[in-house]
Amino acid sequence: MLSCEHRGLYRQTAARIFFANGGFPLQIKGYLLIYNVDIRSIDFPNLKIIWGDDLLDETSALTLSSNLELKELRMPKLRAIHKGNVRIENSTFLCYLQSKVNWNELLEDDAANRLITSDSAFRQCNPSLMKCTGCQHCWSGKQKYCQEEYRSVCGDKCASQQCYLPANSSDYECCHEACTGGCTGRGAHQCVACRELSLDGVCVHQCPPMMVHDPKRGMLIPNPKGRYVYDRYCVEECPKELLVERDACVRHCSVGSHHDMTKDSRRCEPCKGVCPKGELFSATSAAVKYQFFHNRRILILVQSTSAAHRFYLFAFLVL
Image (cartoon, rainbow, N blue to C red; front, top):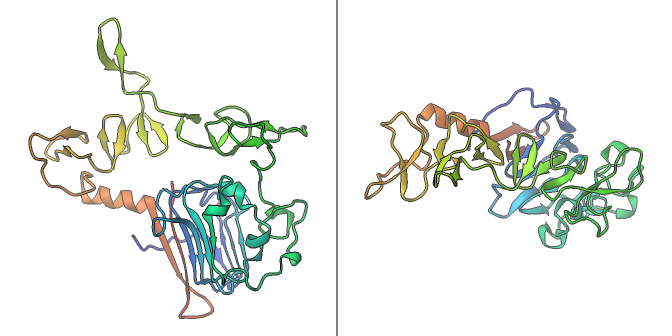
């Protein structure tokens, strides 16, 4: 991991930390860890999805641990925790998370298995004192912290198990099955996020292949509409810091292939005989490799304002 200071990503007082700048973060690619916090509240006002591609201890996408002063974690736009568990331990005052957040909305109706709490969690809470304003589920008492719900309100009518409420209507309509995190309309281009891949803003199950079969000539020919798979997107070209293998942008070549750094190419090639030993991440230069990691993995470590021996830590991957 890289340890780095990012000025302007947050503004802080002794009682609160608020992630600002309009859209940071919208999605967390890996996990979010909040540990040993001695402030009262944390806001992620724009966070929509935690993907859980990289999990803490290979299990958890959201971990709240040893936060003895933290009373509110407010994420009103959070729609889904795609993979991984939620673990809450020794965080005694996070009472809204105990009784007012609908975890089945976030964990795809599997909160019974994916929400893990210790005996020390919520021990100072009285659920009867937790109130929402204008909604049933919320992250805090004010109406602006109401939880966005798109699964429990659907009933059994939607194959996608996701729905939305059209303007000037009282009847929910179903989201497209390619969506995750809900939608704003019925089309595959109106998803909050794509369950599999995004092609020019439209959610799809797979990208157009780079080669297609020409039945007239009986051979494979380049597909002018072909796209490479890059993360959750279909792209015309792979980012310069990645290699290319078949129809995908990759960090390292698969077994049986290698990247020949003597050639002016980023393509993985089949090995002739035994593959040469190389680095796991075969980017073309150390500078490019550093840039790649720097943009993908952010570790923010901030010294506590009220107790020199304490700190709070946010570790996550961003798209």
